[in-house]
Image (cartoon, rainbow, N blue to C red; front, side, top):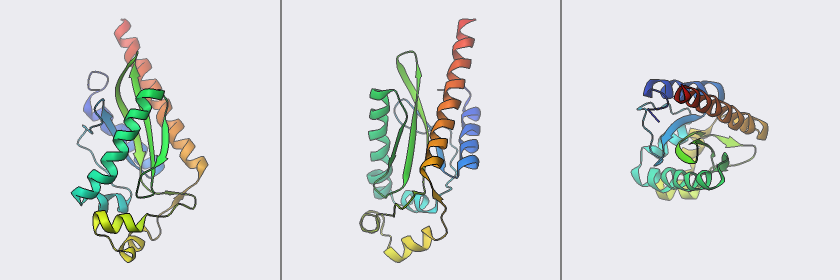
Length: 170
């Protein structure tokens, strides 16, 4: 990924996605690992999950692995919910036939989705009242919002790949 853009440019893309769409944006390498050192936790529930290693491993790491495999196979963006009930968008970055990374965003609830309070209590020790407190006032995303997020990331990734390939052709 750092052959394509410097780490700072990837971090700027993460910030841009977060500011535009109100999600936790991340750029991952081909192994599904974040590498920019940048983290903006736009969604308080995601931050609460990340504070508990077992929850981060059991929720975040699992969905990242699943989506990494899916986008590698389909070569297309994936949109789903994590086990906690929140939105996850993952866009693959291919150079030729090689998956070199992924760009995505997560956090927040789409339409009438609700947090999976039982799972959050068991994995992160968050009571139902605490989950409700964390989620109070959290803006909802519509299907159109989610599609706009996915389309934006896909468009940015396409531009980045096109620019990289043009530089390589010189």
